[in-house]
Image (cartoon, helix red, strand yellow):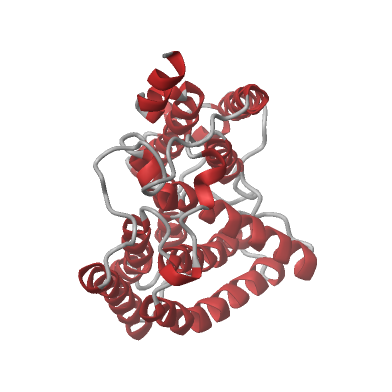
Amino acid sequence: MMHLRRETMHPLRASPEFALAVLITLGLAGLYGLMVGLMALRLEPLLPGKFAQMAHFTLAHHRTHDLTFGFLFVPAVVGMLAQLRRPLKNVAAQLMALIPSLGLLLTLMLAFVLTNNTNVLQPPWVTVGVAALIAIVLHPAGRDLLRSFSVARIDRGMLTLVIIAAVPLLVFASINIGLQGTVTDDHAAMGHYGFMAAFAFAVIGIALLASLRPEGWRLAAWTAGLLPGLLGLASLAFPNATSSLGLVWALTAIAWGAGFVAAAELTLMTDPTPYADTGDDAGVGPGHGSPPITPRWVKVSGIIALALVLLVVTMMLTGGVGGHKPPSGGH
């Protein structure tokens, strides 16, 4: 009877460890967003630790970089919010939440190998990425998290758009990785060029994820279209800021984002997902039954890892961990 009750229980209530990981990830992303807002309002005295010494977003030449850094948290926030309601129907959103951190990790590795530069390594994206990874490990779908991936579900039209966008995005990433290791200005000192490269990788990764159409892929498709649109709008709003796209590329980014969303919606109309939406979270796809219960050792390890993430964040806020510090003479 207890086993049956556990199977029919809402996934968040059945897996409080996963719910905790989701809330911590959202809390961390929200905390960093609040800090950027306080900086924008010139309320630095309200910021804790070394963050009070920074003045990001108040300087015009940093605005595109700062906005892009904020955009990198959008997939994590959107993906985790989706888990609060129906995690088993939003496995794509859960995976999407980790992609920006993977893009930043790839950028860090390339920057280190090619230019011996590690300034891209910053506590905010590390802590959010680790929390999102722990949430994936603790996800109620368990081993069924990747079950809805199949060759038959790939949308060729969306995949074609990804391939088209990948060429300029990879060139954009390559240029910024080079700048990160060879330029000696304050942007490189704070890892800003690396953030731009990671943004390009994130757009490719999320768009590719949406094209594979796993369970809950529509939200990933909208996010993949939103990100280049946001960068395009930021470039139009701050055309003189460093790394802002030119007029043609800004409009192209906006147009591609809108086109990708339109392609996704057209796919939904003409070829709906094979897994019908039954209105519950009893399993991943029809006929699969309840997902396997996460082993206790995984839950314990996840809780310990979450505690370590919170410890690192606490040390950051109290000045115990070096973060996104400005260079001497900078802001």
